[in-house]
Length: 168
Ligand code: FEO
Image 1: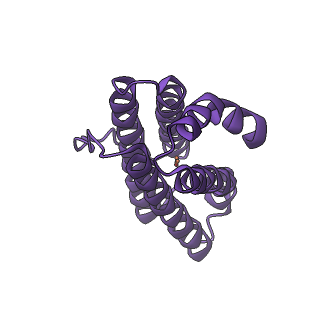
Image 2 (image 1 turned 45 degrees about the horizontal axis):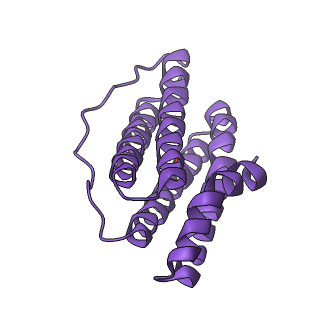
Image 3 (image 1 turned 45 degrees about the vertical axis):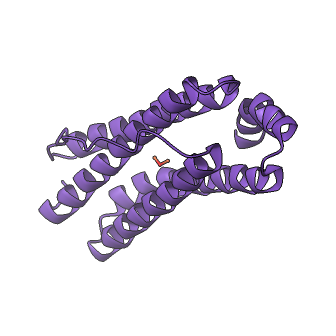
């Protein structure tokens, strides 16, 4: 059984994952109307779906442990970006925040001696290592590319393989 405090904290994480899903959905929609960013568009939409899955996993866990998962209202995310680089910088910053949230939950689970929740959270700990790595790698590449259009072309072409090949 989850403590009230743990339940509330997990529900805060539900909000964060849901908000991430919305943020990446908006990035996908923005990329979709930019010329030549089909790969990046796919990447953002896929990430949005993954964040929804992260949220659902939390919802199932909270309810399974005798709590009540709250489906939250969401803020409208940032809709437009001055550049692809800016979008990816925001994505990285977002992931760092998500990791902080997960770390706080892990910390709380240990304080409460809630080892089931601690165990459940390890999946998120590992996932965040990958998510941060991928976001950092994208930012590094975009930094190198700068305004070079052929570089951007290759980035867009390779982003899905970069994710699928190296990530899982
Ligand atoms: Fe679910 Fe990208 O954090």
